Image 1: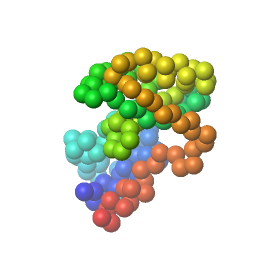
Image 2: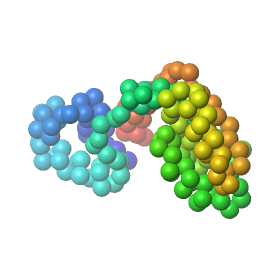
Image 3: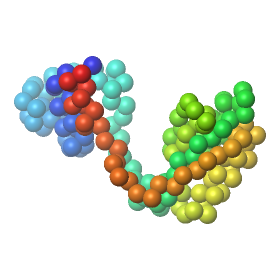
Length: 154
């Protein structure tokens, strides 16, 4: 669970990713040591997973975003995940319920490049079938602030 200060701290950090501890403390109206202790606690609990920059794939030459649902051969999940981990254009992979076993977030330079990536995926005997959907636009980009507010209300 988050309390109000944790939520405000995380929202402030998201709004000002380069902010220092002293400025963050001033902005929140608390001591610098309090901010540092809260950050250590949130990091230790896994609430904060990294402090790195957010890289926009479109801006480094990967304007195509797609989601590939994969069906895996029985007992071949580990092999399939190993194959997917070797493909740099696959940004995320989630195990799912329903018709597909895995859902992959994939980026590509172009649609022919996406087709090459799908062919690489299907080259693995561990992967039986793919169903790929290309994203045409982002209607709601990744966001966490509404969830932080809801987590405090609980």
